Image (cartoon, rainbow over all chains, first blue to last red; front, side):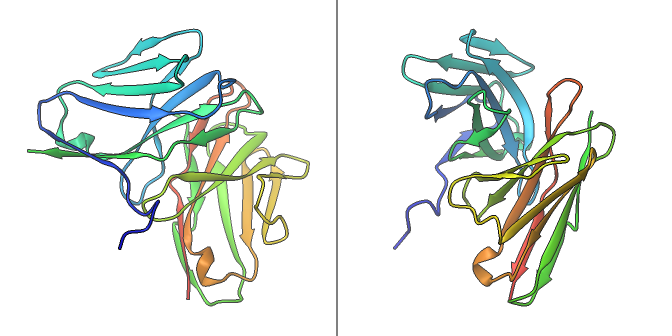
Length: 112
Length: 115
């Protein structure tokens, strides 16, 4: 059988569709959040960030939404492309020496 | 953009040996660097904060005598896995915080395999 923690949740979308990836963070005192993209065998790559005094921030093809009430972040990718296939992590900064703690991650699989 | 390098990119070693991994900020100074460990299909787990000129601070549950960190200059931090065992096999990733603007950049990671 499968062991807990050995499989990332997977989101499969069709090329051209919009993707929504969700993340629950742990500390209500966190004041800065980043979404990272990680391709296989590589380090994390910055996508977009948001501070706790905002609830929405837009980048190129990506939007991050922050709901502090329920400690929830989402990453929206418009017109998803095959190159978007990767694992996506949210990371929270608790304001303590800029340490970031990562969420569990979601694997995005874009079907051509 | 700012670049952080790691060396080696991958290493295979025998059980009981020690392995040193380097993290360098190539075009900025970093008084603070961070070391993460990532097991397959899992998230990045913060191991320790590396501070230039002072002792590293370790996260709860991380053995400081097993994972030695040295941050001897503003552009280099090293992580030494001492007496490595197969369970230490993992992907080790560093990040460096640009002292001028507090932006943080990740290295490409080092794949450690202990036989």
